[in-house]
Image 1 (tube, rainbow, N blue to C red):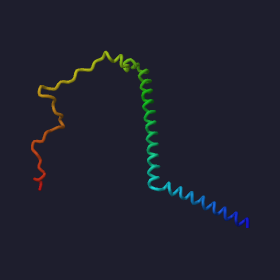
Image 2: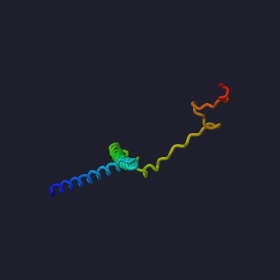
Image 3: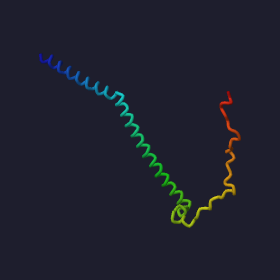
Image 4: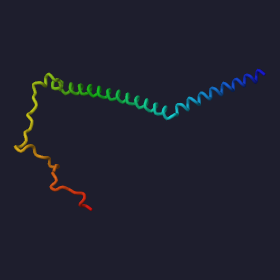
Length: 117
Protein backbone atom coordinates (compact mmCIF):
# COMPACT_ATOMS: atom_id res chain seq x y z
CA UNK A 1 0.00 0.00 0.00
CA UNK A 2 2.83 2.43 0.80
CA UNK A 3 4.44 1.57 -2.51
CA UNK A 4 1.31 2.51 -4.43
CA UNK A 5 0.93 5.75 -2.48
CA UNK A 6 4.57 6.65 -3.15
CA UNK A 7 4.26 6.06 -6.91
CA UNK A 8 0.93 7.86 -7.08
CA UNK A 9 2.45 10.90 -5.33
CA UNK A 10 5.59 10.76 -7.49
CA UNK A 11 3.45 10.61 -10.66
CA UNK A 12 1.24 13.51 -9.54
CA UNK A 13 4.31 15.61 -8.70
CA UNK A 14 5.90 14.80 -12.08
CA UNK A 15 2.65 15.73 -13.83
CA UNK A 16 2.43 19.08 -12.02
CA UNK A 17 6.09 19.79 -12.76
CA UNK A 18 5.73 18.92 -16.48
CA UNK A 19 2.51 20.95 -16.80
CA UNK A 20 4.17 23.98 -15.22
CA UNK A 21 7.19 23.68 -17.55
CA UNK A 22 4.97 23.38 -20.64
CA UNK A 23 2.82 26.35 -19.63
CA UNK A 24 5.91 28.53 -19.06
CA UNK A 25 7.30 27.58 -22.47
CA UNK A 26 3.95 28.29 -24.15
CA UNK A 27 3.82 31.73 -22.51
CA UNK A 28 7.32 32.45 -23.83
CA UNK A 29 6.19 31.60 -27.36
CA UNK A 30 3.20 33.94 -27.52
CA UNK A 31 3.48 36.77 -30.07
CA UNK A 32 3.55 39.43 -27.35
CA UNK A 33 6.35 37.69 -25.48
CA UNK A 34 8.35 37.15 -28.67
CA UNK A 35 7.93 40.82 -29.59
CA UNK A 36 9.10 41.89 -26.14
CA UNK A 37 12.12 39.58 -26.37
CA UNK A 38 13.00 40.95 -29.81
CA UNK A 39 12.67 44.53 -28.57
CA UNK A 40 14.92 43.78 -25.60
CA UNK A 41 17.53 42.21 -27.89
CA UNK A 42 17.37 45.23 -30.23
CA UNK A 43 17.85 47.67 -27.34
CA UNK A 44 20.75 45.60 -26.04
CA UNK A 45 22.35 45.54 -29.51
CA UNK A 46 21.87 49.31 -29.78
CA UNK A 47 23.67 49.83 -26.47
CA UNK A 48 26.52 47.62 -27.61
CA UNK A 49 26.79 49.53 -30.91
CA UNK A 50 26.80 52.85 -29.06
CA UNK A 51 29.56 51.63 -26.75
CA UNK A 52 31.54 50.43 -29.77
CA UNK A 53 31.12 53.79 -31.54
CA UNK A 54 32.28 55.64 -28.43
CA UNK A 55 35.32 53.37 -28.16
CA UNK A 56 36.14 53.96 -31.84
CA UNK A 57 35.79 57.72 -31.41
CA UNK A 58 38.05 57.70 -28.34
CA UNK A 59 40.60 55.64 -30.26
CA UNK A 60 40.43 58.08 -33.18
CA UNK A 61 41.04 61.07 -30.92
CA UNK A 62 43.92 59.31 -29.23
CA UNK A 63 45.47 58.30 -32.57
CA UNK A 64 45.04 61.83 -33.96
CA UNK A 65 46.85 63.20 -30.92
CA UNK A 66 49.66 60.69 -31.39
CA UNK A 67 50.01 61.55 -35.09
CA UNK A 68 49.84 65.27 -34.39
CA UNK A 69 52.55 64.91 -31.78
CA UNK A 70 54.70 62.81 -34.12
CA UNK A 71 54.31 65.35 -36.95
CA UNK A 72 54.61 68.40 -34.74
CA UNK A 73 51.10 69.64 -35.48
CA UNK A 74 50.03 70.14 -31.88
CA UNK A 75 50.40 73.93 -32.02
CA UNK A 76 48.15 74.27 -35.11
CA UNK A 77 45.45 72.11 -33.55
CA UNK A 78 45.32 74.37 -30.51
CA UNK A 79 42.40 76.84 -30.88
CA UNK A 80 44.30 79.61 -29.09
CA UNK A 81 47.14 79.37 -31.63
CA UNK A 82 44.69 79.34 -34.55
CA UNK A 83 43.14 82.70 -33.58
CA UNK A 84 45.86 84.62 -35.43
CA UNK A 85 44.86 83.01 -38.71
CA UNK A 86 41.94 84.45 -40.62
CA UNK A 87 39.64 82.90 -43.15
CA UNK A 88 40.04 83.99 -46.77
CA UNK A 89 37.52 86.45 -48.16
CA UNK A 90 34.48 84.87 -49.80
CA UNK A 91 34.42 84.67 -53.57
CA UNK A 92 32.49 87.29 -55.39
CA UNK A 93 30.29 86.44 -58.33
CA UNK A 94 30.14 88.34 -61.58
CA UNK A 95 28.09 91.51 -61.84
CA UNK A 96 25.04 89.49 -62.85
CA UNK A 97 25.47 87.08 -59.98
CA UNK A 98 27.04 83.67 -59.72
CA UNK A 99 26.97 81.57 -62.86
CA UNK A 100 24.70 78.54 -62.94
CA UNK A 101 26.47 75.17 -62.87
CA UNK A 102 26.96 73.51 -66.23
CA UNK A 103 24.69 70.60 -65.31
CA UNK A 104 21.79 72.95 -64.56
CA UNK A 105 19.80 74.02 -67.61
CA UNK A 106 16.38 75.56 -67.75
CA UNK A 107 13.83 73.94 -70.05
CA UNK A 108 13.27 75.84 -73.27
CA UNK A 109 9.66 74.76 -73.65
CA UNK A 110 7.15 73.18 -71.34
CA UNK A 111 6.46 69.50 -71.66
CA UNK A 112 2.84 68.47 -71.87
CA UNK A 113 2.19 64.80 -71.26
CA UNK A 114 -1.23 65.01 -72.86
CA UNK A 115 0.38 65.54 -76.24
CA UNK A 116 1.88 62.05 -76.16
CA UNK A 117 -1.52 60.40 -76.76
